[in-house]
Image (cartoon, rainbow over all chains, first blue to last red; front, side, top):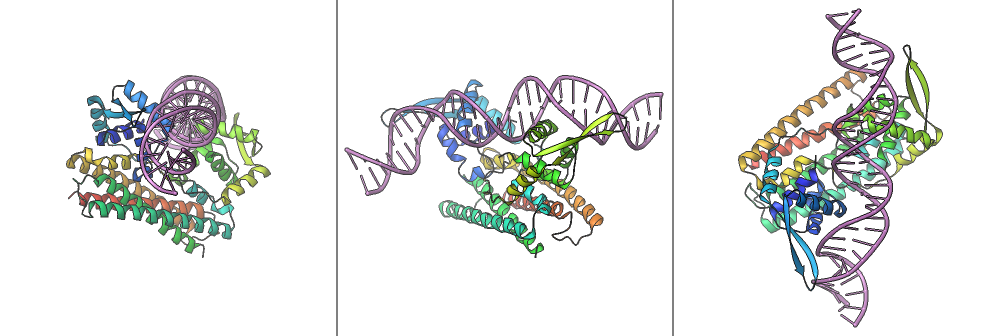
Length: 181
Length: 181
DNA sequence: ACTAAACATGTAAATAGTTACATGTTGTAT
DNA sequence: ATACAACATGTAACTATTTACATGTTTAGT
């Protein structure tokens, strides 16, 4: 699949940046749906240079710190566009360890299950809170009338999706807890 | 993490079964949240036997087909219980290639984006339909008054979660399409 | 001046997961 | 009878991902 490849191409299309910057991007809203560690990013960058999809210029930061600013080549841009338009099948299993445990709920006592679900509910609510705060920041910075041509439209869509996802999860947890009385 | 290990232990706790049966289980509702191919399952079974968590008896099917019926050992059962009660942190990135594309929506023309979203909407609706049919089957087979002690309670919870997840995704897709006018 | 956090880049080793290779049996429908 | 789908089990090679090892610089705060 090489999804990381396209994640990097997409990030570089938005802006020239270093491997470190890419790793940082995965810590933001994007990280809700894709991420990679620097140990995977640096080798991938090397590979993409070898394939001619990206290139870099070395920039001196401060006195002597060499950093590599990567950017897309024409070929890289074309490959990104091709991937963006590809209509891929929805993949089935979004792995979720908590739901795996849920499937085996019959092997637990009712009180243990409640404990597990309550704990998950707390974590999910905390996460939702965090995401809502990020959205609020985005809205104060760029205004709340987002539209297709806003530079932050992708960011906005991803955040709203993450928020709705958490809300849905929370509702299901609460409903399931009620089911257990 | 060794999550597959626990998936297998959990399945074997429900019932003695073969590697093939385990692979089949991942094709059902469970597969919405965890799955593995037989090429990963068979070596893992071997490893779990070596670790003393499971054991098997060889059974002859028909004339000469040897199949291995695996079951939990006492140690295996204990390890499963320990994992079930563990309160793990919610992991951040549920990887989703479509949402990665969404993050890069600014690199697309409006019409391309609409096409992408419409296509995803169709796929998601189809998937929702499938899940709803599975739930209907479950309800005709076991009745619709599910409770904690129903043998199919885990199955039911997983299905309802998968359904709510798709509904949420669909709503977000529709809302986002409206946003693009 | 010092210190801690953030910036910056890599490699090595291990685990996890997918695709491809490889083989044979059994049950069901025609 | 025969053919096809489902049952059944494995290994090999490759790709993806994580954890650990390894090192050095710059910036901001005290």
